[in-house]
Length: 392
Length: 240
Image 1: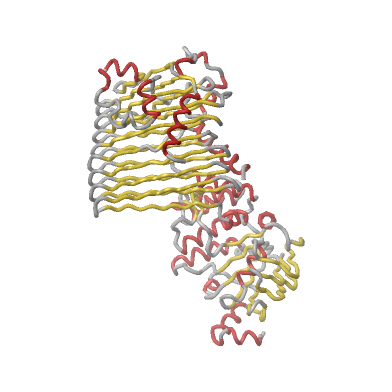
Image 2: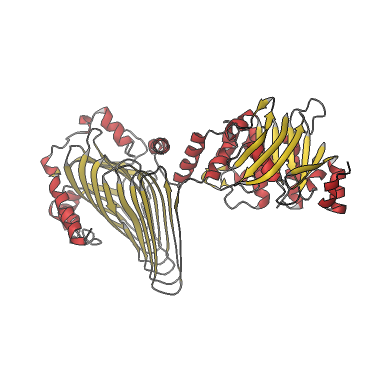
């Protein structure tokens, strides 16, 4: 498909959906029924949890909940933060060009909402904060902009769950995210996608990490979705900064997921790691990874592993290494294939049935160490393994 | 326990085993000697039931059941166990979980790992970065967890340093109930090149395989000494 055609299609895509502000929003959490609450839980957002320090919940365009119980951590709907801080001129559209594509333009021109989260200097948060971007009505396009700032020496863990109503099939989610990890700060950002069969997803994410800072990103998508296109970019601009991206992606038939991460190592002694585990049982996955070494004494590694279960489906791994200076240490490892028969037989020789052996291997494959993954999600992961096995 | 009759096996269309007869009684341990490529591993793999080992003729009886065409996992459930010489790495599967799977949920394997000083490996991925000796230990722990009635061991001493031979030997003695002198129920079939394992585990009977046939049978220590003195050629004219 030519670039022009593609742009036309993307514009068409925007027209297909009704803006979120034309759909009714929920006023109070009590309006959500049991089924919806459970759906959110399975997306990593637990409204009853005691071990979450704050909750942000946006349905369609309306913010239903925005509360944080820790001093030193600020959580606001982005629209309020823009008013309070004179347009957040240091942060708003500073990492992403609003003219990048039709979706960034759409988000700039028709902002529904989003969150602003800031951990103040030195503030270390033990438990995660949770944020949920929830499309509650059919055929709605939701346009959000999120800004996270981890001030010097702070630590923050945010779980963001993006999902749709349990009985809804179609929608469009546009999410602009700009994250700032300042000197010596640490941000763990876990994102869970739990979409439906006809949902289009266009996140645009950029992160900048200063000296000695750490950014850890976990991305989990286990359910069917029409199409995802995302390529978060993290720039390590201070000495010794670290970035790590873990992704676990399962694509059933009908899903098209084009995703990956880019780390630009732009300061000496920075470290980067991208690990992705993808499974296709009928879906089309493009697993990208791009490491750019621009400063001396950097070290970065990229690992793309894909498992093809079933006869249909495509996994296209695109690992890229780009060095601009001589003193860099960058490597990659990519492997795509089906489950090795000798692994199945190994387990069968210990008495496991072929089905159990397969499940064990798939579970192991998806077992990327994810710091702070909520238990409900772990259960969902197990279920996804079973779905994969059945789809073989 | 195990009774093999006139077993002919093809691997990738090539005839490898050519009429094997073997009988291993309850509580007995047998040793299998032979050159590389003579068919020893093929015999073990065929008994266990791996794909690609095609039985052309003959039958394998185990505990009175004809298992010649039984699926691999059913043979394991019936009481057959095998230690792999080069097992695959299972990414993301911890040894701790593997031992539980082998023991049908029991913690016995984990306890034994701790007893044998292998605790630090429990949370490592199965076989990932394991040395030769560590693989052997991991295999034997899995088997101890599985608790088979007939254990098939393919060169259990290869790649193991002298210090660790003791541990490996102890694990095998335990698997084969060597501390029991009466009513022993566990049997074993061990492939060995070096014969070192005979210093740690007593065997009741030895066999020599040459070009897909068992050509010589007898006391394993006598056979091994003869091989050391005269090479395998002599075995062709079996003296025992």
